[in-house]
Image 1 (cartoon, rainbow, N blue to C red):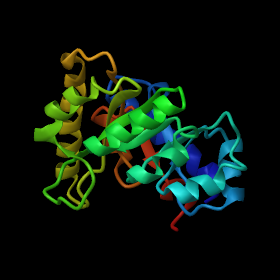
Image 2: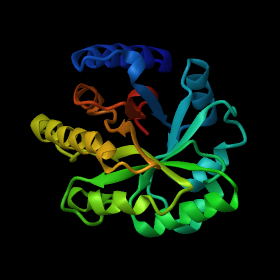
Image 3: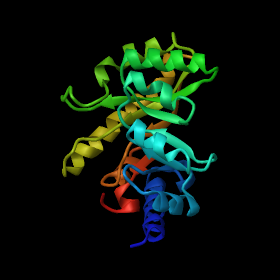
Image 4: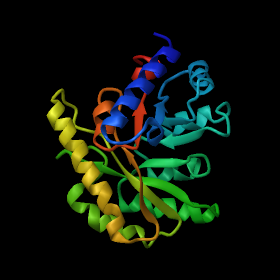
Length: 227
């Protein structure tokens, strides 16, 4: 199938899933994951209406800046090392992987240096695997409260990657947990923390994610094919 056919099918599924959750397709943002995707296919997707793209690695993101139109929103969705923040701070619309205090401090420092605000999502680790990025749910309240001390960082919501399993019930349970934590964000009553974006769901599970409340899905393979 072509990129156009793939996008048409994804938009159809988003529409159906959104209605199941009492929303419309306009309530869902599609972020096209362009990891290892070549220039021509990225520009084709943009021509077909994609205006949010997600990159996993800083260097690959930087290599693509020269040809990505300025009106396209660039998302950093992979793990971010503190020493690479300075390279992307002025180029990304949203960082999906805020997961530790050292990164929060670095984002705030670089944002101040560049006289800007940086938007980020707190990444949640839903597993017991400490090698995976993300804040454990039990540690989220303390982490959220720390955000108020770093005024140049705007936490806009949460992000997660569901368990790597074929068990739909486990995946759905992950997304239900995320929605609960997302809804609680406003209860902290912190000026630079809001519940605007719940980024969850990828090519294999985005329909379930939307049904459970995702406002943004990150899709690569279903758009561009296998890497």
